[in-house]
Image 1 (cartoon, rainbow, N blue to C red):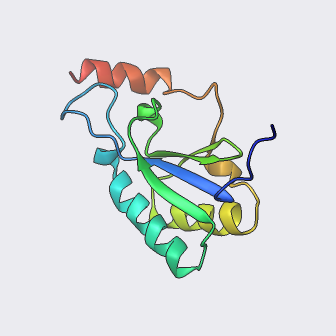
Image 2: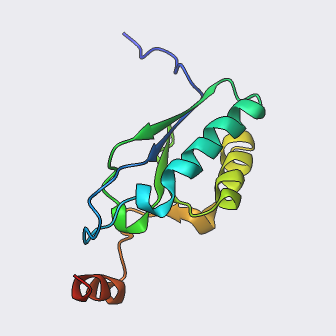
Length: 123
């Protein structure tokens, strides 16, 4: 039996996970993820993107790089930090089908070692 057609043309999972203050990995929520996800959700509706779903998610396990989101079915990950970043993802990825390369995360991306050392020493 073949897989059914996708219900949405794109499904965005935006991490809004919250960890305790001072957690060494940080969390997307403390980096403004909730505001960014709310913006994307409202803006998608405003733009009439009826076949795009924008959901909040729990931890996507890339906390140090956050706020993060992933878009399916492509499986493209982004680190975004401003309303302008969110708008660019909406316009270029979700509307035009392009990629926002400057915001894309690669599987090997992780927190730079020098920043990790600073975070650890600040505990």
